[in-house]
Amino acid sequence: MKQKKEKLLSGKKEADGLTRRDFLKGAGVAVSGSILVGEAQAEANPAEGSAQVQGPGEVPVTLRVNGETRRLNLEPRVTLLDALRDRLDLTGAKKVCDRATCGACTMLMDDRPVYGCTVLAIEAQGHEVTTIEHFSKGGKLHPMMSAFVEHDAQQCGFCTPGFVMACIAFLKTHPNPTMEEVEKGLGGNLCRCGTYWGIRHAVLDAAKAMSAEAEGGLIHG
Ligand code: FES
Ligand code: FES
Image (tube, rainbow, N blue to C red):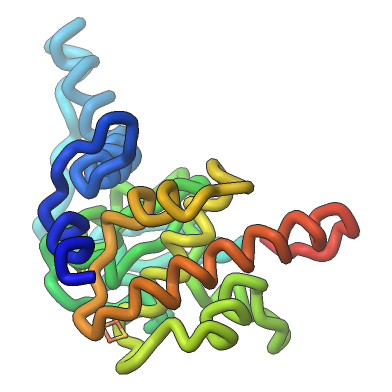
């Protein structure tokens, strides 16, 4: 068990697997899109492509969060995580490391997992942001949440919202995963309490429940 945990945290590349670094790369592609577009335009045509300077004071920012349009005035330096937690009272995503290490702030942008602490709110404009609050609307728990409860996949629970979001995102691309795929696929999230075993079993169970519910058209999100 100790060896397995060390392997998970080390981020070593497996022969055909997804490592923690791969997860970060995937998240980074999603979050840096707007910057890259600006840079590409600047290279093609310096006059037209030069980015418009924003701030340092507050500027209008329009976000799409959990299917709703939210308008805010924010300094451009404000992260998506801080905007959601401090301005929209969406506190499900947790701020732990605040530097793309732990995964506690995991949320979805256009159905892809990102670390909310590494995305600027201003960059998230034009994308569909989904937080964990979306998956318990109306008091009905998403199957992943139910599976976490069933498998006692949390202790202090601080990492849990980020893990649930990472697991939901993982099943979107791996609807019928093996245990090994689950282990590798969740390498972007850390649990200080060491609840990995329960989490992995929760993902396997949720995968079965979700495919059964999808057939009946019952899954939301
Ligand atoms: S708080 Fe964002 S990765 Fe740790
Ligand atoms: S349950 Fe405590 S950090 Fe994961």
